[in-house]
Image (cartoon, rainbow, N blue to C red):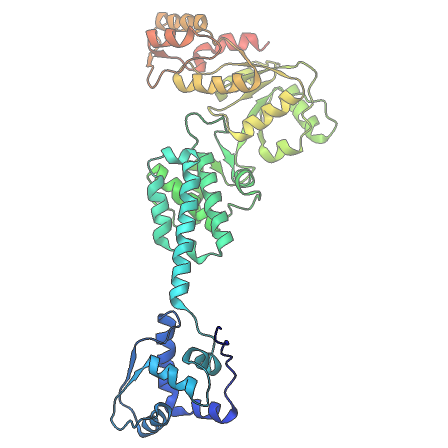
Amino acid sequence: MTAPERVEHPPDAEALAFLTRPGLTRLWTAARTRLERNGLQPAGTLKLDHLDAQEREALSLLLARPISGRTATVRLPDLDSRLRASAVGRGLASTLEELGPPLTDRRAVRDAAAAERARLWSTAQAEVEATSLSAQPWTAQWLEEIRRSGTLPRQEPHTATTVITQAVQTLATLFPGADARPTPASWGRGELATRTTGSAHGLDDGTLLSRWVLRGIALARDVEFPGDAPARRALWRMASVTPDEVSSTVLAYGLRPIGGTWREAALRERADHHMETHVTLRELRALRLEMPQRTRVHVCENPRVVEAAADTGRTAPLICTSGSAATVVLTLLDALAATGCTFAYHGDFDWPGIALANRIMQRYEAEPWRMRAADYEYLAIRTRTQVTPQIALTGTPTEAMWDAELAPAMDALGVALHEEAALDLLLEDLG
């Protein structure tokens, strides 16, 4: 037969009055500290020094042995047994619970915290390994800095997991691998936050997530972590993130949408007066960019083409990427594509220009606009004949998806040609 479980009852009033006498206060304080460190087990020995008469008397009665000196040694197993056998009728841990606040198993707390830290870092590392960050040389330092800061374990577990996961996803979005699907070259911060956190305010200043993302950007760009708001905005821009939806604009010309609001009417009026327009992302969200079916829209890389088109009164719709496929640029082109517009693209004859052209042509099935090998060779010969200073072609060769002969021709001649070299020809095409 198994022994019946011992049921501990609260001490009676007389026993409780004895336990709470001032002469035992130091004993209970020391015992509480030791038990909380020992996993709530009554093990080890306490030494109480400089005892006064009141303490010696109380300890003598409690331990059932005379305490006459200024120092007393108390074995916690003996104290536990003594309490159980006395009128108190319960062990040391239960007695301390009765006398004061609940005991904290600090060893268990430490073990749980260590396990939680291990789980969080395992989660973080797994998230990194599943993204393009695994190939970034600064990722290990970023994780180590977060670990050393001690910030992560202080968060509620669900919050900590969410924030570290979102930080990894945000940085992976900003620094995609070579084989990643095309993403905007720049983002509005609210747009990026919505993409990676579900909330447009997820990357607002002062949030833990924004600090961790900025720390990753600083490491990626090899700059100091920003100490003030202007420096933080500058760092966001270093990662092609604009803090709002009005700072980033797309340069447009000759757009004549058929929508009936004042916004569409303003674009038509500016087109009639041969005036270019800088359109913000916020404006694009409000515009109804419905165009006549099969409207042919020309897309260029450099603002000088738009300026020249306006100066010479050209009428064809023209969009400028300003050297990058920023979010606001793609937003406008997406809206035009949705109404059935077709596109023709021209950019610089250099390797970054070819890479950008690939993105635009692939995304919108755009036709090359004087961007074939024959066009490049003609311009290269013409600039040389005109004794125009030549710009050396540098960087890693990039194959043009629309013309297999273009990259070899550029590599062979080794000359970079900006759009301005073809400006007269482009203006002819713009009518």
